[in-house]
Image 1 (tube, helix red, strand yellow):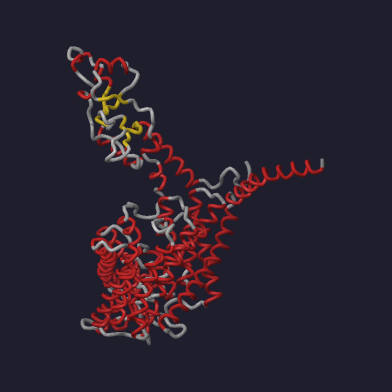
Image 2 (cartoon, rainbow, N blue to C red):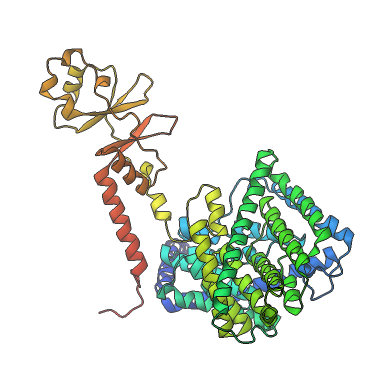
Length: 609
């Protein structure tokens, strides 16, 4: 009897535990204080990961390129020629072999934080994030002309997304968690909590909202604090005397610098895509492209070692001293080509740091050129570098406020930040209205995903014609006599039927009011259903989202349209009415709005009234 009682108790506990676990998760997600505490702790963990990854890549640079400790690869100092010629090629070969070793994930795309927040409500795979981190470490260790920021933000966002999914957070809260992970990563990587937070707002969340402030800013702050405790509090770049005082006429000059920065930014993005398209036209297998990219990068590095790596060391050298104009221009072109080749051939990494280096090279080139026309501009050399750095990065990365704050945190000079703001605004505006994309969204566009940022449009894609279609569509063959059709579908029973040919393919829509029109009674005996079918090309496809569906209704001026299996497979799988599509769209808009403004769920933390 004792055994029976214990067995029943164990069965009862097994039933209770899942419900209790769910209740705990509901209470955790309903408390804003708890969510902020989660972001603080996880932000600190992300900071530790960023420091560890940076240390690992620095150690690999020492092994691969023989660098002295505390030296950046992009400084290009004291690197043996044989290493420059071999290491990038070997890294490309190793990267090319990764898909052969991991067959299960070879054809699976890795969802990054921006895409996750735009299309999937913040859902990311932590395992896939680790895959991207591994590929980025290999790429950066072998000298790819890219930064580690993609790996940092991926692992930070992936970690917080996984925790948020475990907590079963609402869609809006999970998106904030993903942004907080990216904020902590970028803040720790650049020792810049404000820049990290606004990177998350501008790129990963798509907007600033008071509800996201505490979680994102807290994660950025704790990530930075952990980095400073472990790696030191020095800024990532040391700018000795950024400005000798700005005059009112300096601001139009810096705005003019922004025009050229936009040109460089757009050229870099187009060059990366052009390289990828050229390899596709040559029908080179994707897995082989990194090996080719590594060989090309080695050729460039032999002449210009500074193209390797993210560019931090090269930026510091530019701030520490000046160089002649021709070498600066050549290095600018080499870095642009190296970054485009690295991205286009399949190396993993980000253009954040690379765009900063490109901008510094651009600013240094202009400062040297300006000396021929105005020797008094020599005192503004560092300002040219800072404006160029911020403006080119704003054009490529697409986060203008982030770049201004990054300069502010590096220099601690408000007046300098205002000067940089003039160039950043110009570059970002020209890029927006003449190109329309940042680098991340440009890559999405090339892959056929027409999203312009992290704004939540995933619910629109989920509300597709295939999901909304009713399956009780009435069909008749085109050779059905009209008199029989009238008997099968009496007037008033249905507003329309769909005609199909002898192969079951859609042939048009028949309005039953027309089929029962007394004016055609005299000719009805000689007519068949196909004679009344209209709008053979008026149909929907299952993957069309609700906005495309409503646009289609507006174009065809029909009350209902069939949903076909595909553009080539014209079998009818259902139909959607305009009234139903409008109703579903309105319902989803209202639900999405409620998620955005709601501050508590069923287990809200506020006091009962």
